[in-house]
Each structure stands twice: as C-alpha cells, then as structure tokens.
Image 1 (cartoon, rainbow, N blue to C red):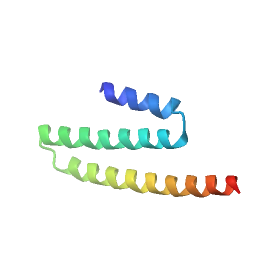
Image 2: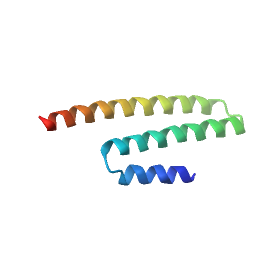
Image 3: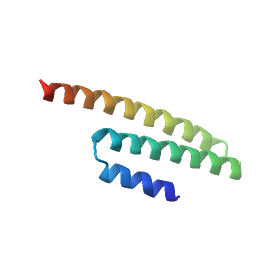
Image 4: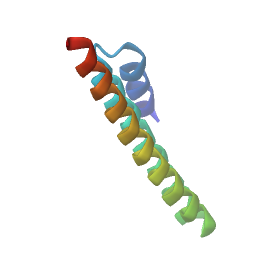
Length: 78
C-alpha cells in the first residue's frame, strides 16, 4: 500500500504533466493488481471481470488524455 502513496505524491506534485500521467497509470495498474489478488484469494470470479474492465477503461483514459495533451501542447508552441 505504500507504493500507492508514493504514486499519489507523484500525481499531485509531479514536475510535469507527463510525470503526473505516468503516476496515474501506475496507480491504475496497481489497483487492477490488488483486485486480481483479492479475487484470487477469496475465489470471487466475477471480480476478475471488474479488473479487466477497470484495466481497459484505464488504458482508454490514459490514451485519450495523452492525445489531448499532445495536441494542446503542440498548439501552444505554435
């Protein structure tokens, strides 16, 4: 759980937007990992479906935010 605090600090105080985005991605992947471990220990199979959905949504969000920021920063430089 300590790693989540470190990543949260990176998201809140990151020196650049890209560092914050990487921190958000790391938090998302660790939450998926925690869901999978919990589902395996408790033998709750439908939690694995939640983990897959959460991972896909996290990936899609990171991709769209990256595209948005890339275009926004590109227009600011012009």
